[in-house]
Amino acid sequence: MHFLTDSSILIDGLFNRHNLQTVLANPKYNTGLSEMARENAISSFGNKIYLKGLIEFTNYCKNSCYFCGLNVNNANCSRYRLSKQEILSCFKTGKDFGINSYILQGGDDSFYSNERIVEIIKAIRRDFKDPSLTLSMGERSYESYKSFYEAGLKGYILHHESHTLEHFNMLHSDDVSLFNRLNSIKNIRQSKLYTGCGLTVGFPYQTLENIADDILYIYDLAPRSVTVMPFIPHKDTVFANESSGDAELVFKVISILRIMLPKAIIFSHYSLDFIHKKGVEKGILSGANAVTLSLAPFKYRKKYNLYTNKIAEKDSIYKSYEKLQLLAQKTGGEISTDY
Ligand code: 5AD
Image (cartoon, rainbow, N blue to C red; front, side, top):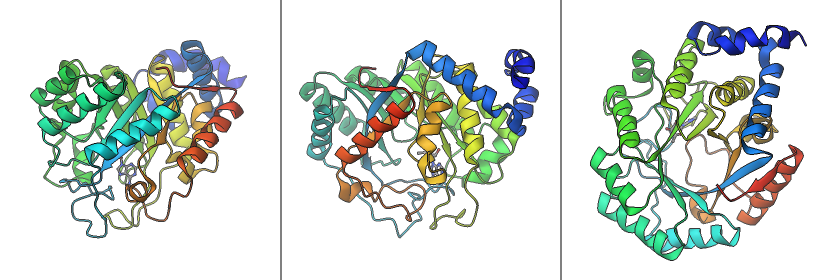
């Protein structure tokens, strides 16, 4: 009850940096925020937890982001690309589970020229009755986004990583710039694609002020989807010895974003289970309303390793699907494939 007495002040004032920092810093708000966020999610989406098929189709990447296991300098990363046929067969698997919404995700891989991507989008639409399709493979030009949209792509996910220039530069070498990243996100919006964005909690050198600014940036962007994930160190990166993001802080950021963006798709990302034994479940109870099912063949899935190679995926796709259904039930929700 104590939370509720001052919650209206905080919720009204959540939309400024100072109040966000106060709320992020103080655990006394955790329970009240997650309850309020869950109520918001239910009033926007009922008890539905949206299931999206995730196809990790290439782990080649030309960038050298210090935090990511797919960075170009990681000689221990065994690289793969799915052929068009293999991608289509992932859609076939997804369809068997009734899935109609998919995310094709990969590194920033120039092998996939715009023409190749357009060809893949068209083949998927032709063979699978126009499913909802989102792509995520780094920065592309406005013209590329537009050609993807015209080919039938619905959305594009691009994470800004940090809205604070100094911090952004601590996470990347000179091959990427915050200016280009933010511009690229604007181009996604202008191309008419839905914008998906993300926020990694616990990045090295990240302060609560940085997170507050990231949240405000995302609020202004008003994206269709947001993925909130914890930082998890990868042994073959510059940040190998840094610590993982704090689970409670990730849950709290999910709740704040749900309260600020009541209609957004907010993912309870599978990586939450790597830092908390009920991570994905708690993500949903904190206001998230979507989960993913990885559809790439097992031999590739274990190679798509952004974080660490301690975690080897063992479950079959069917088993993972069952687990997601169970998890949804535990939160009083129900898996839905129709968004
Ligand atoms: N920990 C958490 N998030 C990461 N990402 C990449 N590596 C890590 C990591 N070690 C996120 C980044 C990137 C997205 C594909 O995954 O936000 O944009």
